[in-house]
Length: 114
Length: 113
Image (cartoon, rainbow over all chains, first blue to last red; front, side, top):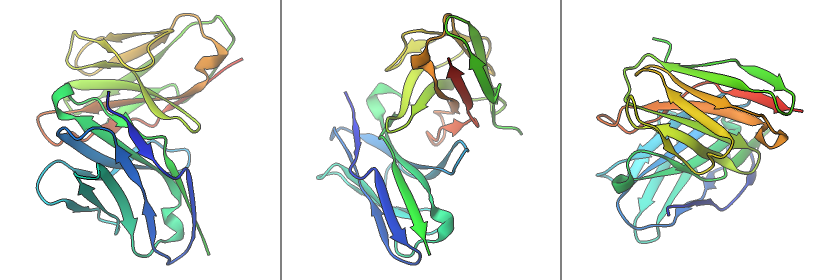
């Protein structure tokens, strides 16, 4: 069965520093990959997704993630974070052959301080 | 266009009580999902419905039942609540014909004492 590992449960950084949130998934079969963000006391919002094509995908607020099939990874990066990026980030994978159910990682809490 | 709506937002139950969490979407999506979120555990799939009239178990279905009332609505029922079901419950929907993006509701925070 598919599984997702987020290697860091908490990542504290200072404002304007770069950040990388790591995500690995278990299977090398064809998958769709997602990053969701959850701000305090809110639901989940899609940040970015990889379905096919270019392995580097970007969000509108400066995050990017790169699909690496050989390493089964989909790490999320931002070159300069803001206080407003403080949130919990979830990596998720959907096995194309198994339908559209998402398997989530346990989440990474990004805390940005000044 | 309200997206995915959930009621109630908060609920406190005593052990053994029953309740139904309601979810509705107005995006004409085929598939709907119920997840629970617990600290340090991420989101775990309870049940899902790939289309109207069908439901399937997810990773943690024990203690829950679901009903796909029509294309819009997908309810989650706790017949006899237990403290282990204290959690935040999220409903989501997806149109598999498009982008595979799941749209989430705002969540229901349930406490079982």
